[in-house]
Length: 112
Length: 477
Image (cartoon, rainbow over all chains, first blue to last red):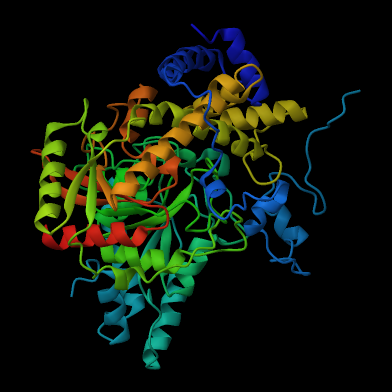
């Protein structure tokens, strides 16, 4: 067993999930089963292989440049107004579960 | 003329020549939805007002004798992971059950600008995570060909809507096979374009380096028409590629004689259903009679695709889904007294079991001490898988495989075994990881009369060739 209940509690905490007692037990079982399966990746020697984050890396990248210059293909000219104006405040607040017309409202952040 | 059995060209021509109206086409599809969708469950939300307004615009153009745009009057369904302004967009999740986007995704905007009539939003697995559509928070979708079976996933609603004549075409999204596998299960055509070919702006993110938007349709030509409409650089998505978009429809008619078609033994191993194997082998024979040259190729890292995929996709998902915090637009649990409790309870109550499982797996794979062993390792294997394809495509123009190892399975058959469900994607995840395009085209039926799909994979940005081969096969079959 790679993943223990303690691990599940720790990871749930990182992921901002609470999880019921049953869910945690199920998670221990499922994560172990999946991680056992992915273990087969270790059959491959990847010591000399570069990681690949996404396919766009392979198109348009100028390998002779450094830093963000390499990705110049993805940039565009600035448009003073922006591509689309920011959403008007009332529209941005429309889907909020709780808003007061100016701000999103949330439970008190700072405990006394 | 049966109004719900038209293709894009025949529907558009019928409206343009005043043999029918866009309004009548839309109404005929809504009538069909009322009659059939109770037991299929392909749609989550209908947007009749928006549809009829667009239909009226098209009908006025036709009445004035103007030529209609390429999709003028064509009724379409949109997977509910694509934002539609003013029309509820849920991603199949309770956490977005009341979300009404303030803007349109680029793909939807381009379809409507080309005259398409958006009927509604189609059902899907929650956040597109699933291979059977059973993970929808609202209701499952039943396969129109056999209601006891799943339509595939995650674009199960889009596939079922097209298969049951409740839309002429539909948009889906594909992260690990979610367009091609349901297309195969429902007996329709499904195209996943190259990564970056179609803008993801307005697509609710699952795994950003793997998400693709593409069409599901009754014919290959309709897929070509939709792709031509939605493809191309979009300044709102920096990963959308600045690569010229050919006229896919014109390219369809080019001959396939002399094209080299690769066959990889790794896609015909254990676990492949016999009926599927025979159907795909016959399809390969058919391609030979059309003048294609069949060439064996090797894709040796294929067995590592599923483990690499489920680490990368879940890692990205855990990051993307962090935004659902109950503050700006998602569900908030009632009665919470602290910020931390609000986050946790809202996410606990808002997300379904599979989404939580993937958030947990992804968070684990990214966490301190495990990042190198899991996430980084998977990214390196992704490089190897991509090299496999690049090597093979030096020798061949396309690669053909089964789309899925089996035909549609029964509802409930795999829902308690996440790993068994993941293996349903074994032949499709490879193309997502490598970013290459793939299409699934119907190639016969099992003994139980369930559809089988032939998958045709192509080089980066070479959708034209896979569409051409699929079209030639479809015409000959």
